[in-house]
Amino acid sequence: MTDQDALAERKMQFLFALRSKGVTDPAVLTAMEKVDRGPFVRGLFADRAYEDTPLPIACGQTISQPSVVGLMTQALEISPRDSVLEVGTGSGYQAAILSQLARRVYTVERHRRLVRESKQIFDALGLVNVTSFISDGSFGLPDQAPFDRIIVTAAAEDPPGPLLAQLKIGGIMVVPVGQSDAVQSLIRVRRTEAGFDYDELRSVRFVPLVEGIARETE
Image (cartoon, rainbow, N blue to C red; front, side, top):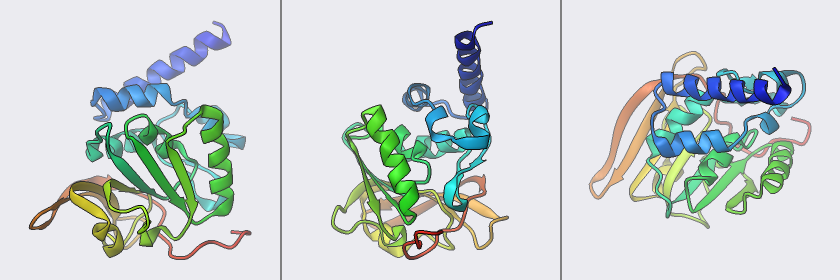
């Protein structure tokens, strides 16, 4: 088997794993087939890019398990005209998936190194509809609000108030919620004329949502 054949087989197994975990939306599967996870996983773990597992990245962060990325993306119910705010750029993988589905993606990250490295990948992939910011994500992006969709890739004790305020009427936010890194629930919030409706989707495990911009050494 050639290296190309082996890679094709790993990608086929990757998509099968997504479907078996409940990622069934055709548009989401197409986006995840199109965006290669490989460039977003560097160093010692590069050969595990197509495993359905979270992996360490720089700054003490992780690249999420692909099936969780797919399920969170699916829960957002993105349409092609939507503007999406992502809180927690990390490796950039989730933003790259979102870029295939939405009109515009704004992604914020508190670690400068992660912003630099993810922007290099976005540029290399030609993702012109992704805009990155070094910012405290817990406050969202008031200057760009309101958003059709918001996704948070770090766990908060409760859905952050500033993010709820930046969600359009009819909009959806997906956020992991929990007071410890051991017990967290993935929540979908829908904003209605009357307020907010909450659905609990599944158990997850994410790094905590931390306020402030990280020092360069973090």
